[in-house]
Length: 333
Ligand SMILES: [Zn+2]
Ligand SMILES: [Zn+2]
Image (cartoon, rainbow, N blue to C red; front, top):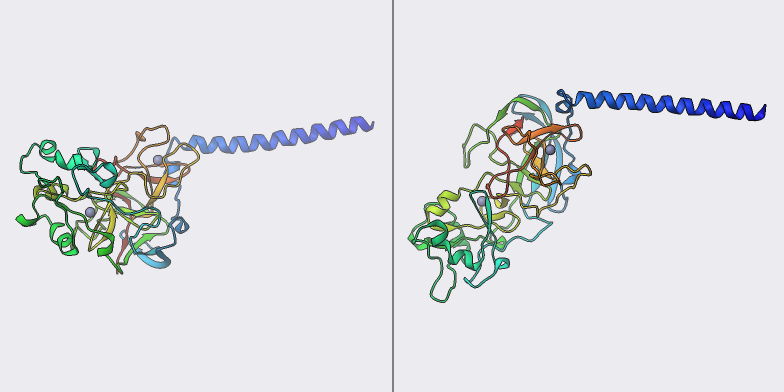
């Protein structure tokens, strides 16, 4: 009797466990089936402000208006644009005998080149133009040495005196700089993508020119105007993190090379590197199997069940991050 009772209780327990497992299986199946449709597009992931490294950043939630008229909350992010997670530079080597470690990188036609002494020595051949000669008889490379040089030479209309100069602006030239950015706490995806605004005052249609913010508070900026830089026979290299300095913006990135803080994902997806100006996450280009997702839209974004809509940055050699904003941006007022 006793044993029989024990047995039937056990059976009952197993049956109800099975039923529970069955229920959870069914609900999972429903979710998976939906992912073939538009379900992952419906998943909205808010900006986790705690992912930004707090050292040089001040982050506050403020009411804001988005470009589509949505009244909502934004993160107001004050940043010194000084990366706390890696060194800045170097950019220009001193002598044509210097190795890769003495210079930064240059981006050309989808490729990333180390700006070594040898690279500077070979620029005439690299660009097929004998006007390139950026070093003297001792092999010393002509490079900007002062704040004044940096301001004058980081300008496409440079005069003859800065022709054939390697341009670098040092962190010491930029002090007490604070940039303020607003990012929607909860992204609002739009039916039509938004082009980025142009550079300079009054540029564009009010949309930001900046693409997004790395977790260290450094901006993912618009592509560097490399044609204008080269047209003046100057080169303004990026450091190995893809960044360099100008006195107006401070330190900023033009390529994602995997140096700034990355948040690895446990499902083989590319690591997260920051947020776009519309509040959607920005991830590195390639998933852990080395492939780029094949379903990216014109902005370089797509959606999945874990991350909702998000972007994958462009190849660093393309001097580019993302192509447009799929969501509304915060309107400054
Ligand atoms: Zn730049
Ligand atoms: Zn993805």
